[in-house]
Each structure stands twice: as structure tokens, then as C-alpha cells.
Image 1 (cartoon, rainbow, N blue to C red):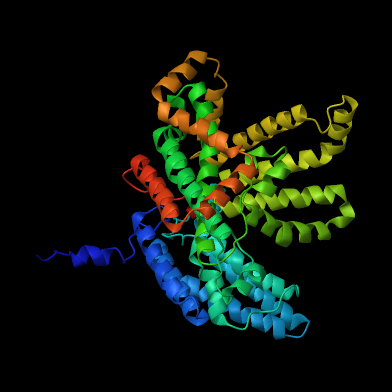
Image 2: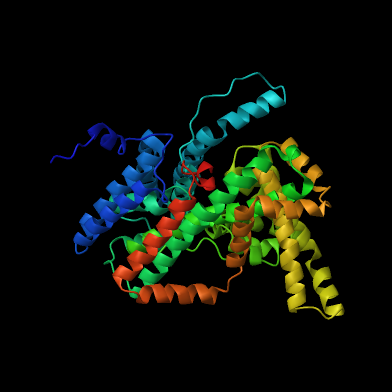
Length: 499
């Protein structure tokens, strides 16, 4: 008996399809990654073979996600590698500064062309400075992430915080590395590059943590985020006036959970997958909605981006404006967060979202002394009721900002806020629970899991690490089965792929 194989369909799996990018939560990726792990273990004693295997797999992964833009990725690697060497070897002075400025312009120029050209055209049209048609420009997935990785390397060399790596191959792996190429974490060269040639040594604890991250990432993304988005959140945000105030408010809470589960789910899987290959990427989330202030939120949310902006934007601005003291700090904060909004997307809504966070931070900066004095005066400083109050207030400030982040237009955001003004129809909440049982259950579970103590997560990781390989495989298989049961017919791309 012969098995009929459709080679056309088989070949299609390995060719870029813009309607079917390669995602962590796809069965094809799981199949490919299993094959990679087998080959990787075979080559475990040879650093050269391991590195080349990862480079080839990473390039294929990016090709499957973004097509011929993998050539742009290679261009970025070559340009920044040799620019780093030129900057390092040049004598201090104008020549060295020019090398540095030219490299920054090349990186930001590519990012600006693909991501912001049509936004600039829109501004020209809106302000009647001319009449231009938008260009047909396709955004390379992950360009903001790999550009910021490359920039951190060049800036660190220019600031003499590190020396350039001597191998284009090793540097290319840093830029290409598939777990974090599409949506972070934005790892730093000085943390990643020393791991490239290290012997692969994965302990039981590492294995347990990796599996825990992959399982939790799959659950967050495919079970919680995708389900509540497709079945409730997206419907309301797309047409807020068709729904009641209660439903709009619950959709805001739902999106607040969705974007966390979607993005942190990707980060969890990226860090877990990297760990199975012997690489440690920086943590990107730390229960952000447990924050007692917006400042603390940014120490817990998208940590790799917030620390990048802190090191390479806020602190230099703060130094430039240090003579203005607290006003200088406020200006630096506001500029940093406005640029953070622009980094997320080329639209006034994203800029407003970033400026809103900047405004939160500035108000907090100017009122901190008064708030601290008031808390001491009424004897609630450092008490748990105050902390609960701060968490609730901070969460709602963040949820309010997410409306503008998610809304399709400014008017849509205003419509949603107008609907929420009339949320007093309590019977609608009961109807919501009855009509959206699955959505409501997952929202409740999602927020409960978010507030689970870190110790419980660590204990679960330890237990997974102690299981035999067969037991670990069964646990992972069960999670994949659960994902398949609730997954929609079409895989949903990760939210942060657009950034």
C-alpha cells in the first residue's frame, strides 16, 4: 500500500503566505520546533553547528512570518555589525560621531519609512500642506523590535559600555533569534552574546520553568485572549453604540485582560522556547495590574521596552534638562512616553495614549509629596487598604488609556465613553453573565490567575521540572488539546505583531 502525498500542499507549508504566518500557537510551528530540538541536541557538542542551525531556522521562521523582508533583517545585521566596529575603532572626535549618527539615521530611517511614511502623508493632507496619496507599504513584522535591539548594541559601543563582538555570525544570531524577533523581549547584546557559544546545559529547574512558561503562554493567548476577543471584546469595540454602557464597560475590562494575556502570553512562550535552547531572555512581565501606580506599572509591563526607553531616551533627556530639576524630569517623562506611544503605532490615537501615560506620570511626580504627607496624616501609609485602593485606581487609569489604544478611531473611543456614562442598568450585567458564560468565566479566571502569588508559579515550575520526560510531554499535550478545543478556525495573530 502506498501513501499518496500531495507535494504541492507540502511545499506550500514552507512558502510564505501572508494570510497564514508562522505562529507559536500553530501546529506547524510545534512540529518544526520539535524537529529543531532533535537536531539541536544532536549538534549539542558543536557550538558552530548549533549556531548555524539556529541562524537558518530563525531566517526561515522570519521568512514564513514576513516574506522577503528577511533580506531587510540580514541588511540590518550586516550594517550594525560593521558600524559597531567602525565606531569602536575610530578615534574620539567628529569622525566617530559621524559614524554613530549615520548608523542611527540608517536604523531609524528604515523604521520611519516602513512604519511612519503614510502617517506623515496623512499629517500633510490633514493640515492642508499638500495633497498626497498614501503609498502601498507593507510593514515588516517585528521591525520595531529588531531595530531597537540593533540600536542598543550600537549605542552601547558608542557610550563605551561594551566592546563590539568579533563575529558577524554571532551578532546575526542576536538579531535573528527567532523566539523574540517578532514581538520581543528586546534583549540586550551584552546579555545575549555571551550565551551564544556557551555549552548547552539545561537543568531540571530550567526545563520546569520553560514548560511552565510555554503552557501558561498558550493558555493566556489561545484560550483567554483569543476567546474573549472573538466572542465579545472586538464586537463591542468595533461598534460601541450598538451595546449598552454595561457591555462597553465590561469590554474595556475584557480588553485590559486580553492585551495582557496576548502580549505576556507571547513573551512567556518566547522565553520558554529560548530556555529549551539554552538561552535566557530577560523577563518582560511581572503581574502589571498589581501595580500601585502607573510608574510601577511600567516597571512591570513590557519591561524590555520600558528599560530601553529609560536607558536610551529618558536618562539622556533628564541629563540635558537637569538644571530645570523637577520640571526637567517632568518634561523628560512626558517626551519619553509620547515617543513610546508613537513607537507603538503611526496614529494620533497611539500618540495620545502615550501622552496620557506621560500626563499620569507628570501628575504623580508633582503630587507625590502631598499624597505621602496626607497618607501619614490620616495614618494609612503602608497599609493594605491603601495598597488595594491604589491598585484599583491605577487599574482604572490604565483601562481608560487602553480605550484609545484599542479603539479604531478617536470618535469610536468617545462613543464608547459616552455609552459607559450610562452603565447603571444593573440587569444588563445579569444578562451578560447568562449570554456570555464562557467569556465571563474566562475573564474571571484570567484576573484570578493574574493575582496568583509568584510563589505558587515557582512551585508549579519546580513540580514540572521533577516530572519525567513522559510526564512533561503528557502535560504539554493536554494543554495543546485544550487549546485546540477552544481555538477559532483561523489562528489569531498576536496583537504586538503590528508594532
